[in-house]
Image (tube, rainbow, N blue to C red; front, side):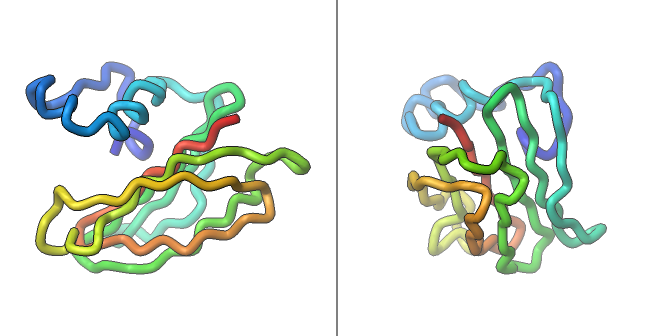
Length: 133
């Protein structure tokens, strides 16, 4: 939601101790800006799912959400500049996220504007990708 929804006054909604348990998530939350320079809707279907990419400076934030139907979505990174390779932090719904919403997976990978990545979103789930140098 930090990527899809505009929120110039974003807040964390739990005790600080809960966020300290997940340093990888805090890395993302610390990086995401409250305003963006560019927004691209990559894929969307009203009341079903939305996938957006937002840019601040040279960094991109890609986020997706689905309704209560799990689905696979192909993320096409062709919005990135040609000839540059980026690092990403990818946060996905975990294997058991359909029954335990706290389950997630974090990985890193390199991408460029030719990369295509298949993402599985759990029922009521989503993902975020932090694209940086």
